[in-house]
Image 1 (cartoon, each protein chain N blue to C red):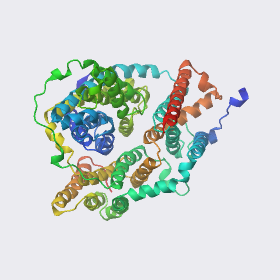
Image 2 (image 1 turned 90 degrees about the horizontal axis):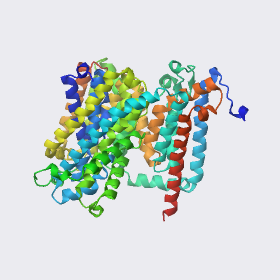
Image 3 (image 1 turned 135 degrees about the horizontal axis):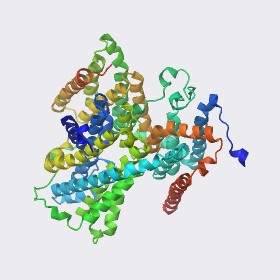
Length: 497
Length: 139
């Protein structure tokens, strides 16, 4: 790794700054790592790719980690991935061990982050090397598999699949891109809108709308519930913290980190599944499962190692296959697009400096997260008291900046932000799923090229089933994910009163 | 069987193949959802009444109205001082102040003063950052 090729004081500063801002976002209930990345994306326009990624990866790691602060101190998960941290962290805080619970969570987060980073470094290049051999058929089926996994993990399979296909449909609005082998003709453009929609909806305004403005509208709908005051935040008395608390818990930590990483590798599954799976495994294998949910440190460890394990895992499909592992890594695609770089199987081989920079940035981000949170946890605990009436207007303004500057000053992108902000809010009301929609929207144009070019080359639909053993395997996986989910949902429906 | 799976692509109309296919799948999925959830869809009026009933209407619709006003005003204001980013700056200050006041619970002068400071400082800082440091065009 030629570190000197990209490392600079600015690079390190951006990672640390990004981690700090990410922790603040994660620590405020209602704000997520995804929102942090969406809001700060415009800042990367003027930075190079490596420096821009340094900032965004810091935000990602910080955003996921910061969620443990309100989860432990208030019993409210700061991010969805901290949901199981509340189960044992909050009882610990109520018993006067808030600071201890926070430090346990911070140490576990570091382990989770580092294990996932190691797996990312080892696994992504191997997977990319393997994926280079894929033809359009396998590439199309991988997209279909990613969508089917996400739909399968939706609360409603049918609505999940519908959301994914809706995302694909909307992504097809505009010109069939000549640079990708299309014929340059328009399609799906409503009359009178061709001036704005000739190139379709830009990715970033759509993402910022769905994750930024929609969240603000959601908060506005519920009346911007009053923030916490300092007296609500009880960190407990200062206790001497010793690493001996981790004695006998290393298996739990490593297992949870690996579960988190594996969940991250599955496209679109998300941090909440990572922490829930890690937590339930820790409980199953514990000698004292009855203590879980009542302030058991092992529960905090499992949850935090699991959700931070997600960070490296989610980058594996992004960097080796071009498929985002979660909504935050979907936003990272935007950062690559801004710099004119396409992620996929060729990315690591063609961009070794960027790849090394990403690994290094993740390492610094995890270490910075640990140092910042461990030694300044009492200050971060105060972050949860920042009033929403100050934060949300500033975020709204930053959303506009992000949308406007993406294409160097097109006002339609700002209106796109509003359209998809309202659409994102509406989606939750009619139970459509945002994650499959986003992945469908991002991957739709590629899916089209792979599908049409395959048919142009082979002229037969059976090629999708007979091209290679990988194609057959992917169909089996698609059938298993959809069939398994349908079976589980039917059983759940029958057992419901 | 071979004829059934055989497909000939006409390049001139190839832009319509995938959208048509996805449209058909969406239609079928929509139909399946409509059949499965027909009772819920028939009762959707009550669902929306419930959402509207629980909604904080002034804050929700106020946010929408302020956002639309903000977006609409930015370009005309910016055209008065072209290529300076003034449209963004001069519209963002009232937006942050207005939406902050809208979001604030139990309004008081003590709470409003920090908000007003942020309403001026944040847009000025962002405007300076993007126009002077990053050389990006703002409206």
